[in-house]
Image (cartoon, rainbow, N blue to C red):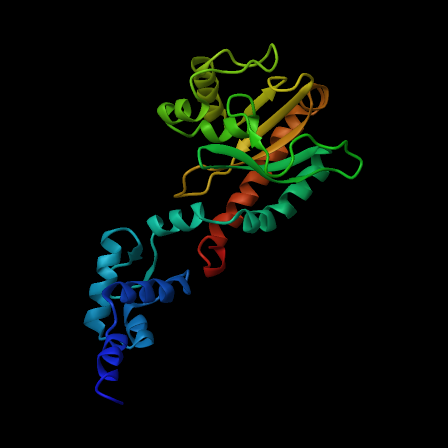
Length: 269
């Protein structure tokens, strides 16, 4: 090695402080049920005291959780899991939700879809419809009108009123006679949707069509997803309302359990 090479080699060998924290998080993420700080120190070749100090720093800001000694163990914290959950790709969500939607469509005989809030809007992510169903009008990637769509209402019901007002805007376009007249009427409906755990659209965006939706409630996560069944008012509201509500609630619980489990795995990001 020449004299000129020595500074570059020394710089490469000198590990940046942030790199140590990242390596710790990478190691911890591989053990969703927890791993001891001693084991992490051995894995990363760190002194035990250094590993404990770095882990405590991560725990102080909510990125890591630690149990008390003597059986101390650490795992990813809720704050980091919220970030991972919010950053999950639509492709990953489509893969996870499709079997749930397929079963829901089979049980209800109607088109079913997953909606997601992000970037100030609610959009459909994936849809499954029975083989003999007419072409659904809610296609993946479509933005849902926040003050008419049941899928959007199911999500907005769990947001503060000021956030709802920012999302829906100051004025409402009246698609049909059933469209809500303004934010106050919508907020009243959202309060009831939050209480009951279910949201509706009954001819508010398209005459003759309806939607019934429920939020996806994952412990420790903000509500940003919903499951929705869509079809005619006659089928959804007049014929199968109770059945659809029951099947939606069961499907939402199954999907939430999948998300809660997979969000703790390295492949979920």
